[in-house]
Length: 291
Image (cartoon, rainbow, N blue to C red):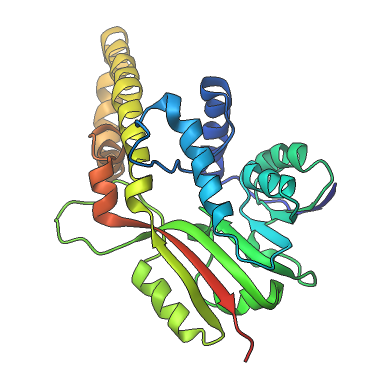
């Protein structure tokens, strides 16, 4: 395995992905980190999540453009999609800024591709590909100048596949319970300004991905909330002299952060309806048309 290393400090996203990978492997027997793709005939449940995640990968494979042989998987997660593409005969290199996830990816690539341990903005130039794949990683990429950067890694006429959620304007008056995502309108503006890229395909799969939020909400309400309440009850009952001033100081100095955490994780707001109000999960296939 060829691997380019670059040290980086762990981010909240990297920590979250690592936790998700550990929980998925031991609770669901899967290390797939992507959203599930839920058709109408697949009941939404944790037991069916691995199946839905496989359908998500299948959806991406079904939309691979003709003529593609070399792919750069940017933000490859655990290497699940890369492994699937390798099994289908594609040549795949990966980009991952997470040392932990890179180790997982290496175990799947088995020397069949190059792993760049860095962010996309720091990826060395030189090698070019028929397609760049951004599967739930595009939200972490700097949008300004992105199309010029695409050209540095694409063969003439190469493609860019993006599958990720974007932010939209909402008139509901309710706050989004989930951060992340570029503004969809801003992405469209940047695409329109990039004269050398043509949109080949666009599919809104929000209805097929929003059910994942049902599983998130159920897990938070049935597991996280009871654990939080148990810890607070134990602390308040057995450590009253410490609990009262600690609670008062926390509200005094961290009130806004605590209110934000309460809303996002414990209020029941992180659900499919809230997701659809504030996000659009989009699939884009772009083609580079050299001037």
